[in-house]
Amino acid sequence: MRDLSIIIPAYNEAERISETLTSIAAFLAERNLDDEVIVVDDGSTDDTIVVATKHSHLFRRLTVVSSPRNLGKGHAVRKGMLIGTGRHRLFLDADNSTDVREFDRLMAAAENEPIETAVIIGSVAVNGSKVSVEQPGFRSALGRFGNRLIQRIILPGIEDTQRGFKVFTGEASDAIFKRCSSNGWAFDVEALALARGLGYHILEVPIEWEHRDDSRVRPSAYFSALLDIVRIKVRVDRKVRQREVV
Image 1: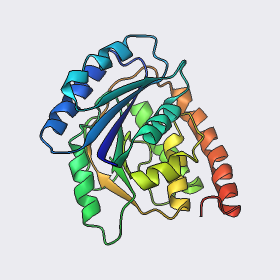
Image 2: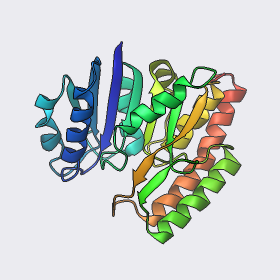
Image 3: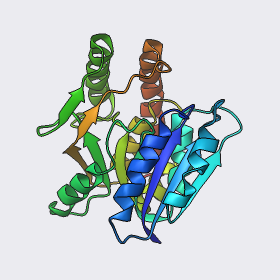
């Protein structure tokens, strides 16, 4: 098993993924790790695959896998997390909204926990976090409203479920993502709910994050995600009752 797998879901990120991959390559070059980077292209119609592949020379191992069509961020993350072989598996957004060096902060916090941490969430909703570029007001308000509903419906006590910067142990990743089925934006909620149902310790750690404009995420996507959360709640509860995840 490798030390670290970094998974990057990407859809039409040809203009932004170069910055992200260059940053990750510099981060890994400073460390003596048995690492791998996996870019999962989610049916892009631009040159995302070509641009990502051109960075192969910067890495010990860079794998670019693709889907035949756009199936959703949840599908791309799930695919990458199950392909990965690292003892720790980090997925982060292709837009570089959170620098990969925040990984060190997450791991340091986990080391100070009295019990083993299987899932570490990068969060902007806990003390010590920093948002250098805010979301537009409407999106920010939708996000806060959505998080309150998520906590009320399925994940009480987790302040920020949707940030695209999370670390899973290899064991937890395999156990959780093989049970996931959500392809949409609510996939994080499903993964965390399953983690909790499986009894894994989840830790929320402050990070530095900046909003990167992405016109592909429409306001309607928030409402679709909230409907998906209700369906996820039903699925996870059924699995718990059937002792499939406990």
